[in-house]
Image (cartoon, rainbow, N blue to C red; front, top):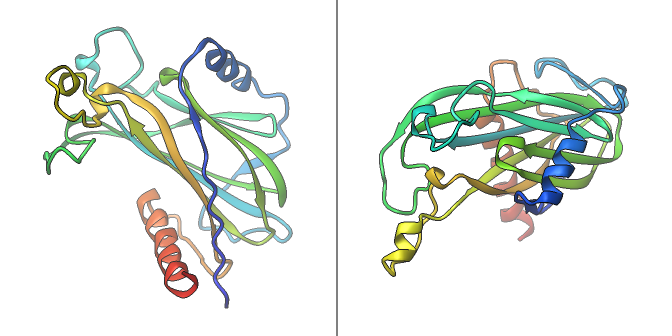
Length: 222
């Protein structure tokens, strides 16, 4: 079977007055018939497509915040709006202390890890997807096309702010989750219909599967 991969670059918008208004407007759903939440263990219904939206981000602990915020608490959520239907996605969170591993690791240090995941079933065709972290004032918006009978993964990768101390000392500034989330890198991968995920699969396992398909694609069609 020929492997098909669709990569979509998505720009992220950080907080401005316009961004705040856009996020507020998108948090109010005007429809309830666009998608339904499903279990990964269920096969894709005939004539429909599955879309898995997921993100793994790290924030400061609640006691490391300079001002009152939902970061580091269960109230820190991901907003998802598709064609006017909106839901707030709660993440699984845990404390995480990551060894430095060098200045290249933006998630080094002690903080709170969030794993967000929404498993959706919707009709094939063109859809406008809006995803935001309201607390950080960051959102992305893109039109995507889904094909009937497929599993699709939209994986959001955070872009963290750069540490100011490096710039003040004339050193190269490095990204760190301590500086907050400034945007996203994201891509939509079309997963083969033959893939049968199970309910026990974590977001990282689904992403790993999608990445393995991408590697095969690059080897065969580079």
